Length: 65
Image (tube, rainbow, N blue to C red; front, side, top):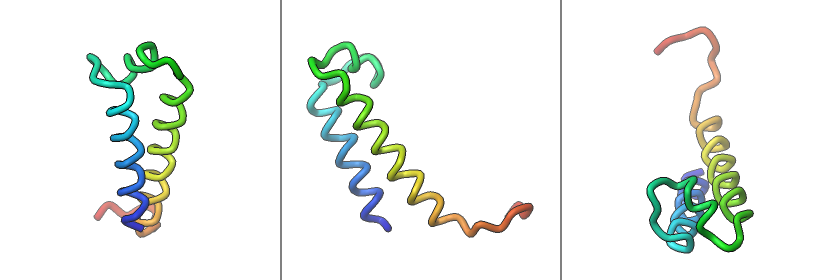
């Protein structure tokens, strides 16, 4: 499962290196020539991270531990 986190990190890092630095990550959407890459990179990063976090949680409802 840690492979998901590594993959998510690599995807996000690759996008940041491709787009370059800006004042914010969302500002790179307007900077790159292919703006759909922003949506793909952040969507995949969020999806992979969500899958990892859902697997890590124990799934018990109503307990605050």
